[in-house]
Length: 634
Image (tube, rainbow, N blue to C red; front, side, top):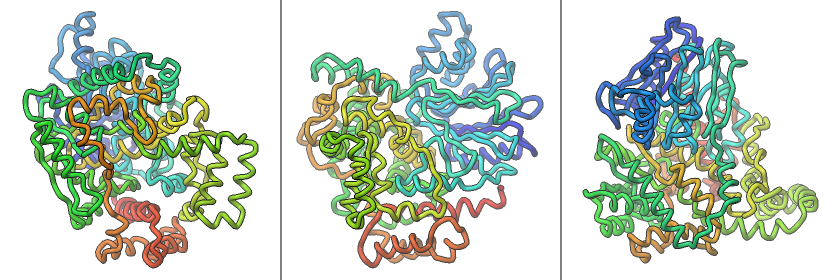
């Protein structure tokens, strides 16, 4: 796990600018840093290193291929690199390797097989910058699911830049890109800015499973973006070729695939552990880790003193049964308060999933003991775990019977009737207007009109639900699961885990997102995943072989904090009201002060909590500490 950065055609001292970028992401790679520039200085690559494999100088980056044709800066891990190395040696593509890093193997595979064929061989998480010195072409690649981040875009008319964090790009000399106000309505609806957008105009997130190619002379017209793998096509293919075995056989195959993934992801030259909650997903990963290890696996949990939010007792019970070396930390309101000022720097752009706070705290504790931690993320989205999936099916089975040509005008009439003053009728109107199950994803746009009044600028942002093929999957739950894997999972969950963990130089790995596991999950019939209100059936079948059923069949509390209670306490309330002071909002001229204060007073005076309160505060924290405070680096 590292950080990468670079640019083309940037005016000014390239050494000063690449150092600015590297320093901004030092936390991603505290062990070492390097850079490379072409002879004419037009192409520059930078790297910060967190040493995981091959701790020697032979693993340093940017790295040149054996022939010298290619130069690469690489962030991530290729879990099957040893198999690729064996193939390269067997086929005579290379005679030897200078070190034992996956970076060198990947680089030689790129030269031997070409970019797309080489990346097709890889199983892993990655963001890659590869420069072909012969053809004068720069390639940027991101892993299939979106575990590793990669931003790119143009500064002015000539300069192109890329980095693992958008804050690196904003530190470049001459950067003056404006705030991308057209994404604010989407941000204030979901609490994150979805790929391919970023908070800045002309700066983008490279989408998962995608390669960007920039040819000399590196202008906008020389940039092309192409997918090399598609979650949607994988889902369609899996559902068109369903697994034909029994549920027991499905569990056996899933166990085999997960074990293979966990085994590969446990490989490191540094200490490895795992996050453990009381949930199915993390318990399954820790159970498989322990079954594959001759030593006690290190497991980590955080607890809370707030009733209804604590899972530490249950996690401790599971850890005891599995025999792990377990560590837990109880967090307080003051712990959370102390983290909040760091969040805008940590995430680089507005991001407002409040579980970012406990995620950071558990990462910080974990980093005191290990350098790599495995996570159970992905189980809910791949195996139909969220309780909302059951309600989606129930709602759509009612609404879907009515022809869309009838539902749409009824939706419009209801939205513009006096009944729309009540939330339940606004929700009903939005559901009536959905074209298909995927359309249920955007109902929050319509259910509270105040959301679209927060930002002053209301420009259209073509988010993914506008591109979604509503009937590409026949089963309702699979449709909403696919939407989650295209949107919520990469743009919220994986962003949260990556930024929070890398802020303390902790590498996180997600075995559920292994290519083979993902493809198998999409081939399973829905009844192997959900029956009534119980999801993740086949994953439970795997886990119950290791952990007694009664330890796991209890209400899931989620990885959350009572932010709606804490914001009423004097210290946080004072912080919040300082951020949304009318003079501050009027000076910035981006948000509507009247709307912001109506939402705030609904909460503080009338007891009406909206999650948009946290979205607003995280936006304002970013504005005040990151955007407005960048003058010296702009």
